[in-house]
Image 1: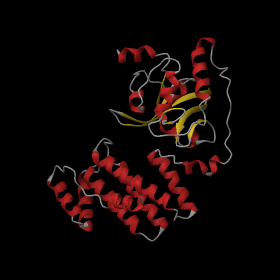
Image 2: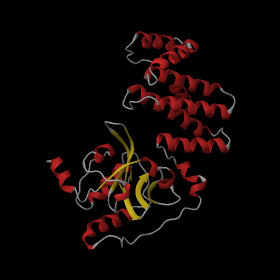
Image 3: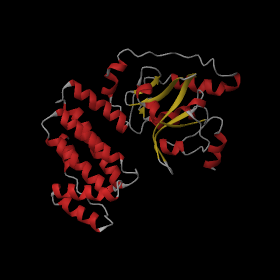
Image 4: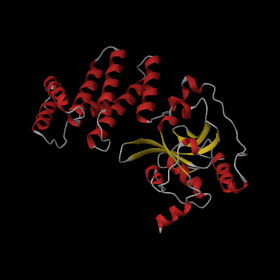
Amino acid sequence: MKVLITLLVFGVSLSLNAQSKKEKKLHILYNKGKYEKSEKLANKMLTKDRSNPYALYVLAFLKLNDAKRSRSVSSSRRLVLQAIEKRNKIGDKQLSLYKQLNDSIHDYVFFLVDSESLKRKYNRSYIRLLAKEFNDTIPAFYTLDQFSSPTKVVTDFSELSFDDSLRKVMLIFAQNLEGTPYKWAGETPKGGFDCSGFTMYVFNSIGIELPHNAQKQSELIKNHKSLENAKPGDMVFFGSFNKKHFYTQHAGIIYSKNGDDIEVIHCVSNGVNIEGKDSSWEYHWRDQVLFVVDIIAKKEEIENVKN
């Protein structure tokens, strides 16, 4: 497996449809292993177009190659960060080369963490990098210092009005699922949940049917709210966006809100958790919020979409 990942990262050829003559030349140089010439040409291309995806793609992979060969752990990490920097300059995240590059960097960082050959300092650094750059909160993420003594506040939902009884029922239902393990594509307590499987199951308990896909769930309601205007029972979506599109990578439910103090209940890599202060919600997920949606108040819109 480790050998396969290494080959996946460092044996990738530039097999994309280059448009210009220089891009085609870069394609040829890179695939022939003429890396010095590739680097010079890529940098030259960036002087005219700072966001040229082909040039950034090649330079990022060259950084990964250098990271692999480096004998210095600190130097290797610096090169990985430089590769990520190149990735971030590619404007369109829907380009196949962005996705391929992103997956390759992620696989390499995951490989380093999984190799158990790093000193604790650097291993922890890469674990945090997985969470920050790839939204990958592997189980080891929850062994870091900030989770050594988590504080969990149990709410009685007293902040909700009588008219919000449906929210209370749903949140209590969700609360009883805490501790259910994570399972990719899972949608039952017995088998385990993934993020959208959990939200689908919870809302189904009060008669609201959602698709088993975080992106599709986030597209159901057009009326978005900010985190500041959220209330318990709302859905919260996480991911990234540009001027035209948003890309949902995770979904959860607002569990409680008292001013700026917010708790969410969601299914992450270590299962269904209620998280607030001193948790991955505060250290990672809060910065990834796209928007909040009041699914319960807008349930008629969902029914209209289905019909």
